[in-house]
Amino acid sequence: MRVWGLFADWFWRMDRSLGGAAEPHRGQRFSAAHPLFLGLVMGPAFGVLIDSLLLISTLAGFDGPLTATTLLLSLGLSVFIAVLFVGMGYFERLRQRHYGHYRES
Image (cartoon, rainbow, N blue to C red; front, top):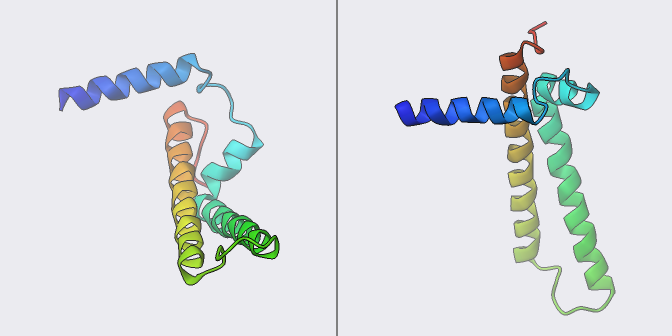
């Protein structure tokens, strides 16, 4: 248990030394206030990017880039990106709450 406390103390000291205690800018405030929306926007946006690259590869004449496997892989990656951005939003909320910048409305 003491190791986690030491790690947390180290993390907050490092975050403060890198400017984490400064007033958050607009994007940071938005991601902390709307983490689910952030994930629901970024996941499909990433999926559209990957699918468009696959479509361009197909149109360019490469053999088999647009298969069921690659489409499932792009779907899985977009879900992973969505979950990652939701987690980042909640972590940003926690970080801002630690410094007293985030208040529930």
